[in-house]
Image 1 (cartoon, rainbow, N blue to C red):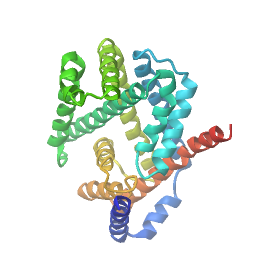
Image 2 (cartoon, one colour; image 1 turned 135 degrees about the vertical axis):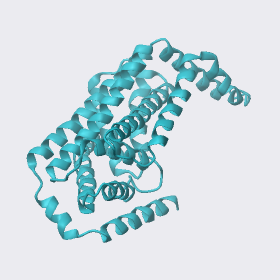
Image 3 (cartoon, rainbow, N blue to C red; image 1 turned 90 degrees about the vertical axis):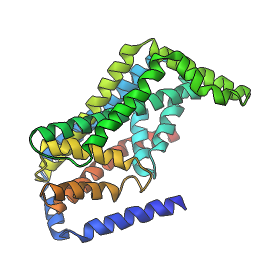
Image 4 (spheres, rainbow, N blue to C red; image 1 turned 135 degrees about the horizontal axis):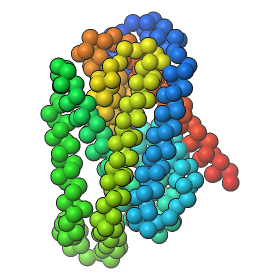
Length: 309
């Protein structure tokens, strides 16, 4: 039932957006793509995956877990494939956890590392959007909801820092679960607490991983800017720095199928507000999504190779 609702939301939003633009102009813009800029966009997305592997590797090493870079690279690409071709991003995380649970000796530990990686990425995403909104305000461009972006960034830091900096806080927060008095729960909670203590003992790892998360978010903005140039879409850098992170954050809400419809609606909203053509917004959204999905087929081939091995 939930899947049908999400499918209906995606279909309704896509119909609304597409019915409000000139499809002939949209197709004309897509046909005139510049291969050079599109190639740079694809290269930047490959760089995103490389940084993601580096960040993941750093977090695993902080937990004294050694996994070959080749294994992590393949896992990242396979998870990218699942994220793009399954109706949620959870499938990709399941792949990453399964690929590292063996070397980690624990699914709980592997899951903790992936969750921390995700959390760092989310805070970096909102931070990049906040900085973009602030930079836009300095040149007289008002971004709706900019105040909420800063509040979300602050909330993320306020929630994360105490958990890492105050070991007893984690034990206190998990105490209600221990009252269930189940050995398997106690075992997993202990592993979680131990993992947090190891992260606390290696603050440089968390700082560098967070820096890597910021690089990823900035590079994703660059990917869209390159794609925009390839489509001859007049996307200002400051608008891209706000639009892209905001749209990615909105897509995380389980309202649609992989963000379809929601993403196009957000793009159309911002483009309309800044006096830019709506068909350019839709072209940028659909083409950039198509590029990522096409590139993720590399992960699909890697997955098929696993199955046949």
